Image 1: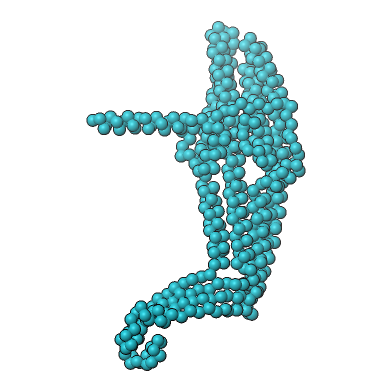
Image 2: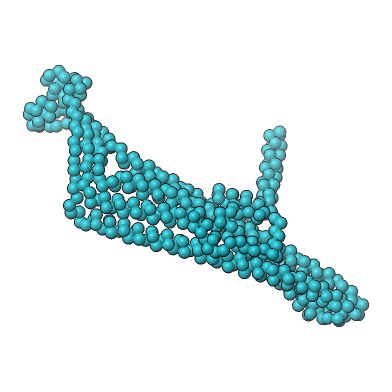
Length: 446
């Protein structure tokens, strides 16, 4: 019975622990860190980087001499020459042969050295690709995080509209009962309330979708209980975007991993071309060997046991070989031609990466400037629209305007508030992107 109680208590505590962990409020920095630790693309690129490092190790190990061994146990039937007595025997011959040998490349057009350099740059490029994936994930997390904050503000704005309309329904209902206004006004306001509730539901659905998008990006199974920290974000109306497009581009050009990766891949392709050209050079190799053996003829005829034969039949060998390529189906020439094309392609890839980076900065800068202008205009619009709505509401309460005019004023206020929220978060995201290109970590508190 005790064990059952303990199990039940443990289950309750465990379930509460899950709820508490799910109800934890996440900051942007925590979301980014969690995404980087759990994202599948990052894990795959990490594995690919390790594969590249293994290729580099293999290229370095090719400088070492090879060493291989072999052993054979043979039976020969009929007339045969014994290789150790050099006599012919017409009987079954039992023999053993042991061999140890290998080869070492002394010169092959520096192909081994260039292969090491090629793989070294590929490892460095893979590491930069990993950094680039992490950066892209971080930006995606920031965008989804800000989308949640935006949708929360939109939900709040819609809820305020619904509450105002409900209050107005109560007031109008009393006026109808008193005979001060026609029932048609009440019906129009109730219809407006129904439309606003539908809009509120749609906005809440968008908020739920934004939660789902972020949790999926974080590789969290369910958005249930997931909540984000709402930071205090204030935008000064006198804010300006520091720097210009060219200045930001020059900073990014020296630090962005996609640029560095393209440069390293270009270097790798240049060494690949050197490897291909090395195929035209003669190959000089050093071979080394050791062998020994045993035959039962010596054992039975001359009383030479196995250990003595292995000791006496030792043979050591060292040799040099020179392989000169003359005609190999134009393989070398075609490899050189393809390597040249790969170098040219890598040059275009680097140029394209630089142009894309400039376009991204140019777009983010233009969007940030536009968003700031839109935000400042939206703030003024909200102030004037709020004042206009209060004035219209007062006139509606005394029957000076119709419910149609009242609803139009309220709709205009909601649109102005929504436009201001959208402009605010668009400006925040674009400025964070620009800061990111400058090497500033993503942070909503700065």
